[in-house]
Image: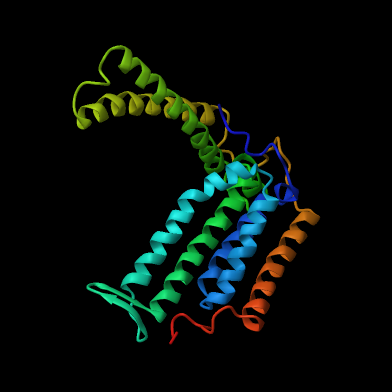
Length: 264
């Protein structure tokens, strides 16, 4: 059963998809230049609140989606904390060398990973792929042959999963699933799935060519997308997040470190 990710709509669902993509990409690159762990902590916390309160999904689903990124936070942080370089040593045991500088760098790296995760999750949970490609064609003049090809490819993913489950049940019935090593199982699954995917992709390509999807001019669209006041609210939200993070990080710092590159 497919997840109805876009059933509970919020105002962020009404933002122009391509404009939202541009805003998230700019925010993504802006995070790369934040080296103050206090500012990064504030921005990550605000992004988490936006993710939890404004994406319109159930909290169960949102917390479930956070599990791999929390694991990424700990793994990226612990590698820098335990094996980073620093002058103020807190703990030294064999190859493990925990210093004040490595600790703050590790926390900063983990927070940056979480901030990237929240940006991606917010965009994914509030943007339907079909609307995104329609917006790219209408606002950013993306050639239709590329946009519709991507949409067709996305539609194939659940079909491939369904075929995989059907094939697995058929192999279990025939007793093939329990036999052979891993390489044989890969062979049993890969050949049928690959051949079916090639046939389906060829049929889709022929259908798209027959319906003149390669035509660049005078196309009409089922969905007409444009800009609205929600785009302005989105810009204000990004500026508010950055301004609040900078203000609190500089005026009310949690730790005395202002730049993890030169901490200590």
